[in-house]
Image 1: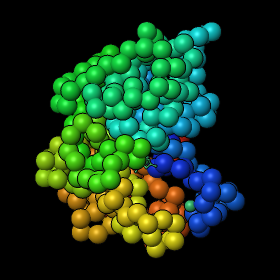
Image 2: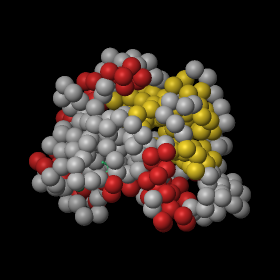
Image 3: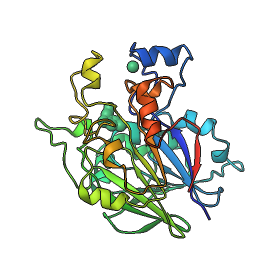
Image 4: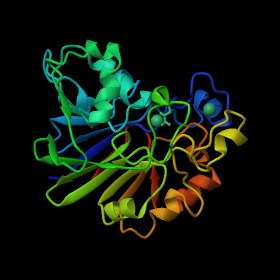
Length: 298
Ligand code: MLT
Ligand code: MN
Ligand code: ZN
């Protein structure tokens, strides 16, 4: 059976448009000239009747409302079986609070991410009796859905913004930021929405995958500074850029990937404008720019 994936939200934290942003992309999205995007989440399924979420976005309610595949099939019967979070960032976990309505599902994450979640007293509203916290070790295979095997692996990144101390390391490789490898019947798909750089080990892992969803936060590292929107580079935020010799387009070229899809795109990224030169360049290199509601199969 093929693996199905629905892009519930293609944007990075803030979405497109971001509530307080008047940048060209946000202005175009507000006017309806380019598509608006909700925040980072993908739903996956093998059989189309039970689904798992990869990250729980703050826009989860809206994302469920417009995905017929995720609609309840009976009074209180949801096709949602499990949720897996790949880091503790707010754009990936705040939607868990929306899932507090007495619905059983499994919540999978590394021990470090589970600790970030349980360190927030508000998370107690998501009843652990109904939503067991399943702690998974790196590289340990587990069943995300019946027949769908998942494996978490470390990718270079940092701790969530709200856990940053005085000194921030953005190249940590451990349990704080992970990628997910999903496999079923010999098909492998990878989901890596946050990644500071492509290491040889990561390239090896990605090689030959049928489908890869990858960190598309920024086109270039100083994009937010140039736009006059902030002081942070992509590297400071733990995100690789699409362009340049160390960028994802170059680094993931030649790895024999079947379908490659950019997700988690920041509202400043020029690829979000369908008529931009950067969009043409990314698509010319074989990348799909994810849009909300898009369904892909591998
Ligand atoms: C990120 O992806 O860098 C974070 O989501 C940023 C944030 O927490 O706002
Ligand atoms: Mn994010
Ligand atoms: Zn903006």
